[in-house]
Length: 208
Image (cartoon, rainbow, N blue to C red; front, side, top):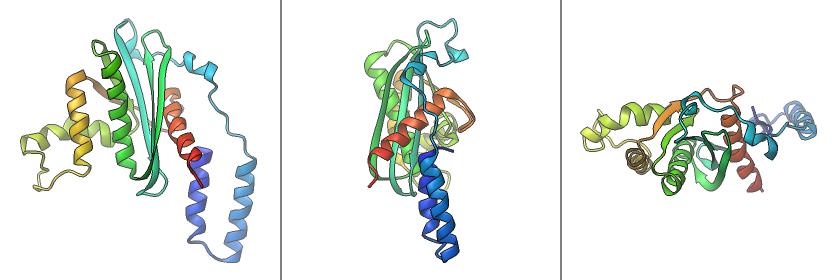
């Protein structure tokens, strides 16, 4: 778990654990966390990320790695994404902050923004989107087709949550013919960790 996320969790916990002993313990943990130096990916390291197997021997393919998060749900949040070409180079990175949003919206917006970038710069390339959000992957690969067949309604006849995001993601997925793949989060996957870092640093920059 990232240092910034741990700080946010401690802040949330402190609202509920109000005894003197609990508050003293939280202060000690905050001090320890402030002194902890989290290892960061340097700019030099981003061009040495491993090449996804889907890009091997596929010179026209690009990989998009996106992640999103929220501090409080709903609350302030951000997404981050990076673009990797078939040579292994990281050719673009982006993060964006939102004052009031949700985790799922940020996961969706990360994929949307990544595809918008890809569509504007590399429309003829084969596109792979990697995310640690099963909500996004299962939604675009399985749920959306059923929703569309029912006029963008779920089986219970209610509109899906975050409908506008899903409609935009579906539109972009069709235009780019992107393939969506799930990766396990917080498991040492370097590109996913970088996308997570971009989102958290963006939230850090807007705290206070």
